[in-house]
Image (cartoon, rainbow, N blue to C red; front, top):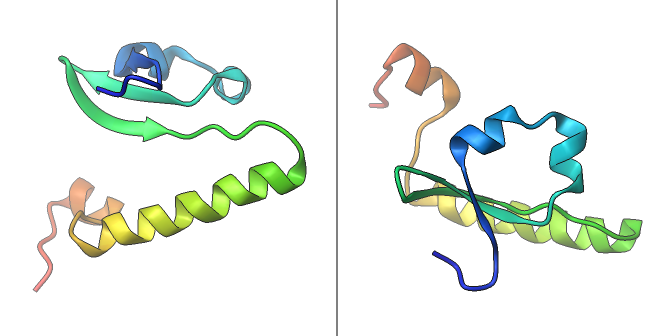
Length: 81
């Protein structure tokens, strides 16, 4: 787990409303002690939030290049050929 980003459980995260999530600091979301994902929640002016969004998109693209499934594949059990 990160030394610099607080962690919360998936159960705690799911209980939050959208406006409450927007108020959070960035957090690591865990389940059964295992890291699931990191929620990067930008704060500040438009320039700051745009900077965070662009960097998060680039990191997401890099992560997606090495694997993972689309939502439909997960829900419907589809397999890519």
